[in-house]
Length: 263
Image 1: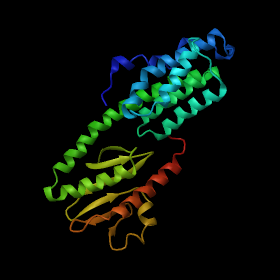
Image 2: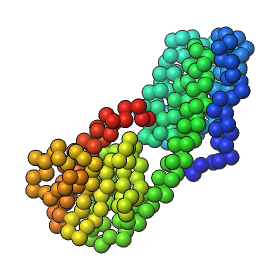
Image 3: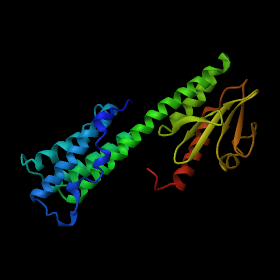
Image 4: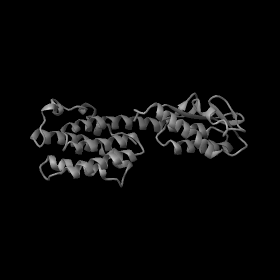
């Protein structure tokens, strides 16, 4: 996705707008409370297109933003039940997103509407909006790096390109949030840490996983040549799709367990 720098350039400077200073003195339903809500709306609206481009049929964040905007402008009233539903809906949409950028936008919307109940939730909107912009920038870099992987596969012997594309597809299917790049001249995937590499060698395709995944699956790997961190798949045999999925999933679980606080 191409970043419209002009559209989003002010979001970083609005991480904590002047409006949000001295939040201890904000009283619910006061003019200042509504002003805070409008500031949160303004920032959430700026990044909403990031979410909508990825999730065309999901209007939950948009509904949350529209509701709090109308309340802040004095055009309608809100109640706890409705606000809770709108906020939880936006956060549920966040959990279903495929990319961090869209996920953070939905979080910003969830915090914006929650401002009705707790004014300081307004601060969450610019913070998550800034995260969305940063994540979008990283996604753009990732697209460029993915082209390097395309080139790596294209430079392989034509008869072996389908196998390289297949192992790439398997990894991306199991770890859709993983960042694809080139490392040590090999296609590389990271998700909450180092996840996997693959490479074409003279007589095999190597799948490389940080220890101890290979050792923990030694029974599954009988018949394959292995090292402490790699499995060799012979070029003259079909790739064991289910085995590759199992190994990558195992590494994902370890990374998630080791990085519970990482988004």
